[in-house]
Image 1: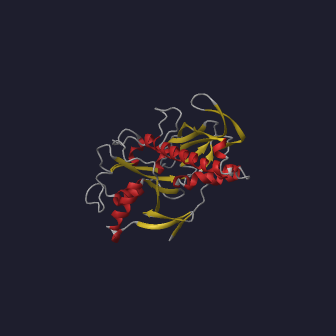
Image 2 (image 1 turned 90 degrees about the vertical axis):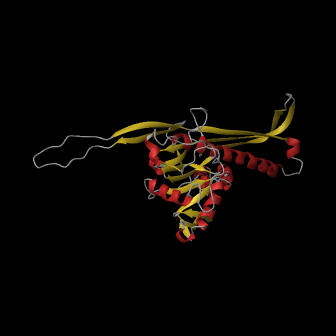
Image 3 (image 1 turned 135 degrees about the vertical axis):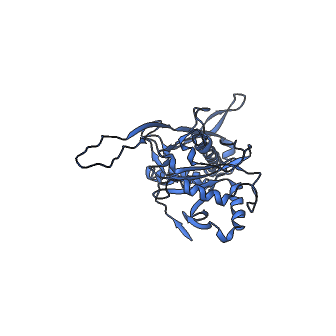
Length: 332
């Protein structure tokens, strides 16, 4: 069984370092329990209070073969700066004090509610990580799908593989090489790992739908986060996978095993990064079924990631992400 190295700084690692008392770390641990992608993303502090300014290489200097006694022209590289904006994901919890105190263990009851709120934040972040669109909703983060939305109209279109779907029942398989110099998660400059949990010291007045007061425990959650892409060559999108046409033996529809091979060849490099495949439950199921029908030449294996057994595709771990849709429009 292969073992995948865990050198990248995860959200939980950052939280523990910034809050040795464990308050932030407890919430970070809850966040990562039900969201596998959070176990993969390396997190770093941004260089701006609202995001991170990225300097990207946009052009290389010229190099020449020189003749003896002859000079060469001078040249230089070119760069561009891009500001990655972070967003603030929030939730507010009000629990009627009488309800919370009923069983005599108020803290346990509030923790059970916290789990529900954190799961909701989990799902929202995961969806926006892929589909967030600040052009349509300025308060969101810019996700991966809007960045990789055109096969022919953008430079990074070379890293989009067309799986053939033409309708609106499509999903995508993603290959991402995480690292501090390629793609990473960010939190604002000066913040605590982007996560703040304000647990009220006691109860306070709250209001019902009619504006009448009642005593309640009030907790609020704030998670400032964003996606930083320093090098798009380390992201590959396999788009237009028609989920209604998939078959267990790839006799029709997308051949997922072949698409994996194409994706691995598209990514700039698997060296110096933490590579992961991401797909939803539909893809996870059909990967297992198609590979079992091609077992002689199978690229399926099992590996150990952070002590957990995971499916490997061409030696790259596959992570299931429920936030990835089966209703994507065709990417052209």
